Length: 275
Ligand code: DGL
Image (cartoon, rainbow, N blue to C red; front, side, top):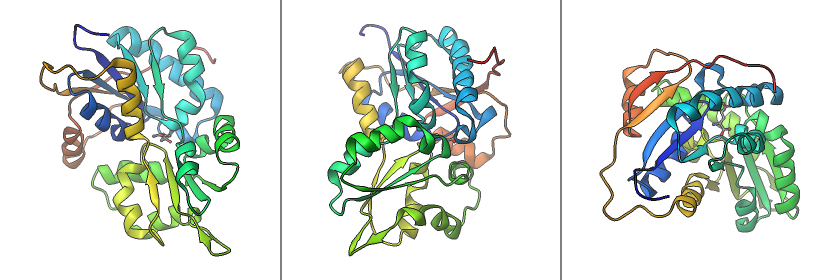
C-alpha cells in the first residue's frame, strides 16, 4: 500500500471510536480518514446478535462502495466480537477489530484479579468467553457491563453533567478484595470508556492499571499499512458520517474538532433483509 494517500475508515456506534482514531492518526498522520458513527441505533451493546450483524452488514454495504477505504478499523468491541468473520467474508479489504485486551491484562496483573468493563453485548459474547478461557485461566476475572456507561461517555463529551457518584456505581463491582489481594488491572473493553478515564481514576476505590486498547490498535494498523512516509502531506480535516441527524451542541462540535472531525454529514442506512 503506497503511492496515493491511503484512506482509513474508523467505525463505531457513536463517539467511542474517537479514542481509537486518535492514536491511529498520531501514528499515521499522512492518511486520509473517514469516521463513521452508527448513532441511529446506538447503543450497540443492547442489540441482539442477529440485529447487530444485519445492521453492520447494511452499514458497510453502503459505506464501502461510497468511500472505497484501503483499511477499516472496527473501533467497537461490541461489534468486533461478533461481526469480523462476516465482514471479512464479504469485503476483500483488511478489517482491524478491537477486542477486549484480556491477554495483556492477565499477563501484567500481579494480584491475579482483573476487571473487564464492557457493554452487555460484549460481556455475553462467546468470543469474550474464549479470550478469558484461553488467556486468563489463572486469574479471577470480574466481567462487568454497566448498561448506561457508554451513554454517559457520549453525554460527557457533550459537556453534560455526569456525576462522580453514578460513575463510581458503574465501576465499583470491578474492584474486588479477596484474601489480601485486590483487583489491580481493569480492561476498558468498550471504546467509549477511555473518554471517562479521568473520572474513573478520580473515583476509583484504589489505583489500578486501566488498559485502553487504542495504542495496540494503532500498532496493528501500522503493521498492516506501513509507517508514515517521511515526505507525508500535512494532516487533513476528517470527514465524519453519522447515520442519524442530531443537534450538535457547541461543546460537542468543539470536542469533535479536537479529534480532527471538522465536517459532519448524515447518511441514513436502509435496512435490507435479516442476516
Ligand atoms: N463503543 C462500543 C464498544 O466498544 C459500544 C458502545 C455501544 O454500546 O454502542 O463496544
